Amino acid sequence: MVAEVTFFILSALALGSAVMVITRRNPVHSALWLIVTLFSVGGVFLILRAPFLFAVQIILYVGGIMVLIIFVIMLVSVDVSGRQQQFSRQWLVGLTTVLILAAELGYALYRGSKGFLLARSAPAAALENNTQAIGTALYQNYMLPVEIASILLLVAMVGAVLMAKRKME
Amino acid sequence: MVPLSHYIALSAILFVIGAAGFIFRRNIITVFMCIELMLNAVNLAFMAFSRFRGNLDGQLFVFFVIVVAAAEAAVGLALIISLYRSRDTLAIDELDSMKL
Image 1 (cartoon, rainbow over the protein chains, first blue to last red):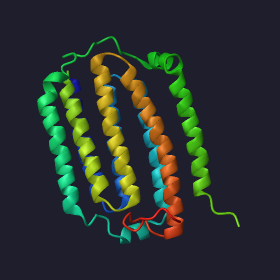
Image 2: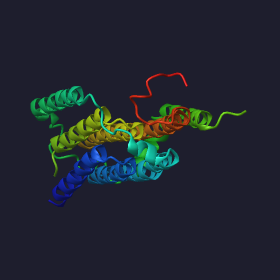
Image 3: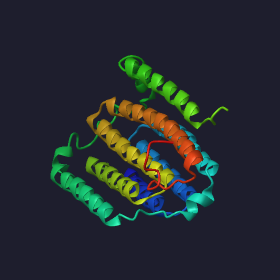
C-alpha cells in the first residue's frame, strides 16, 4: 500500500517536472526542474529495491551531469540564449511526430500489457540489498564492459579537454 | 505491489515528453537536457524489467547507460562551449554546418 502511494506521488512529480523542463523559457529553470525529475526517478529506483542504482543516480546524474550542465549554462551567457527564440518554428511537424510516437507506444502498451506478467508479484528476496551482488557481477561477469567503459570515459575526458580549451596562439 | 505495466507506462510517458522537448526546443542546452530525460526513461524500463524478471543484468545495463551518459555529457558540453565561442549563438537552427 505504501509502495503504491509513493509510486504515484513520485511518478506525478516526475511527469510534472518533466513537462516543466520542456516548457520553461529559461534554461536554468529547465535544469532545476530536470533535477526534480531525476530525484523522482531515483525514488522509483528505490521502490524497485535498487539502492545502489539510486545512489549512482543521485551522485552521478544530479551531482555530476546536472552540475556540469548548469556550469555550462552559466559559462555561455544566459542573456544571449534568453533573447533567442526558444521554441521551434516547425511545431506542426514536431507535434505530428510526437503524437505518432505516443500513439505507437500507447498501442504497444495496450496490446502488450498481458505479456508483461513476467512475475505478477516480483520475487521478493532475490534482489534485496543487491549492492554486493552488483559489485561481484561487475568485477566477474562484466569485467570486459567495465574496462571498455573506463576507456570510453578516458577518451571522453581527453576529448572534452581538447575541444573546450582555447586555441593556442 | 505496483504492477510492471505501471512502470513501463511511466517510462513511456517520460520518453515521449523528452522526445517532444527534443523536437520543440531550439536552445541546444535544453535539447541536451531532453536527451538526458529520454535516457532516464529508458533506464526506468530496464530497472522495472530487471526487478520483475528477478535477475541483475538490467541493473548492470542501467549502470553502463549512466556511464555512457556521463561521457556523452562531457563531450557534448565541450562541443557546446566550443560552438558558442565560434558562433556566439545557442539556437540549433543557426548551428547547421559542421565547419567552425
